[in-house]
View 1 (cartoon, rainbow, N blue to C red):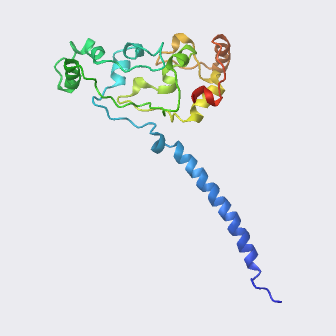
View 2: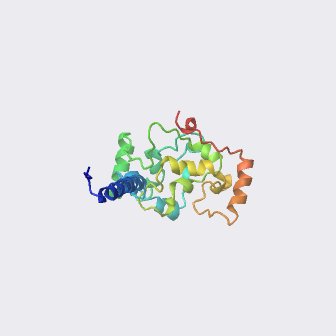
Length: 216
């Protein structure tokens, strides 16, 4: 009985199968890269705000400590958005008549809060506590980036689970002395790993990677 298919059909079938495998693998790799990109995570994208508040001006220019505005960051899970009164502590005297700051003055007169756009917005199914991280020696700039060089605020990192796990698995690479947590000019030393291991032991930092740590 003569062959129904030409001999080359076997080769074509093998090439097709392997080709499909490589194409699927390539598409999966592409999807993984896209999911990590700023197009999805919105990292490195400056956010429009009701008032274009400049951390660069207030932190680097005026030397204002993070805790002056984010008052609850050391004792609460939430860093806190400053009330308008905090702004007016200075701006009742400085640039008091600036048209640019009229929304701040209007908020102060009426008692209606300014509707800021949240920049670091974790999913509702993620539990995060600022006070715990600060107490363990995680600096503000470790997660939020160089805020003193941000004329408009943006999300420095992806905030994806793999980014969090990098620190939870190897905290010695990231922690710093508690006295340097709010120092935006802090530069990790050359012996960061040695210092980190010492701080991990001193601050009793655990490598918490179980699901229930963040998903409660």
